[in-house]
Length: 156
Image 1: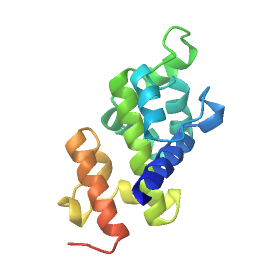
Image 2 (image 1 turned 45 degrees about the vertical axis):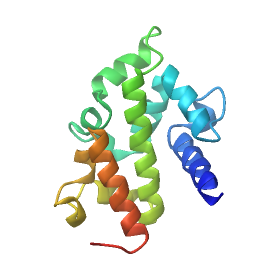
Image 3 (image 1 turned 120 degrees about the vertical axis):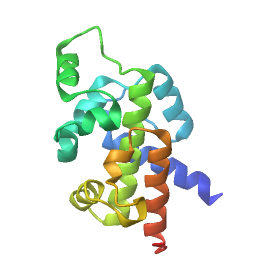
Image 4 (image 1 turned 180 degrees about the vertical axis):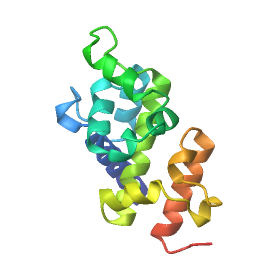
């Protein structure tokens, strides 16, 4: 039963990182709510909100690697009324980035420490930067598993 609550908390935490009530028409309270929104596509405003708050995403190439969209393209979408939604792939990748960042904030204790951790080579990831692994589902899973090990004090 505790796992359901954790999933709901993860979904709410991710929803807040992506702008929460300021961006979304309806709240996301759990994984099924997130699924429904992701299937339609996240509002571009959610990614703009995240980029505005997270310095790491404004570094050269990070947004393109992590989400599959450049900062410049995202800025163009801001003024283009026709492209209000991200593609399903971009939505999933943006959600996954925010989900992992939220977990890293929880484990590291602050947004600043989480961003620093994501941009440094990690021993448990074969000295790769966590942010560089987010381009694929397998890489994202490796980062998430490593964060969980750190959270529980299992470093090997």
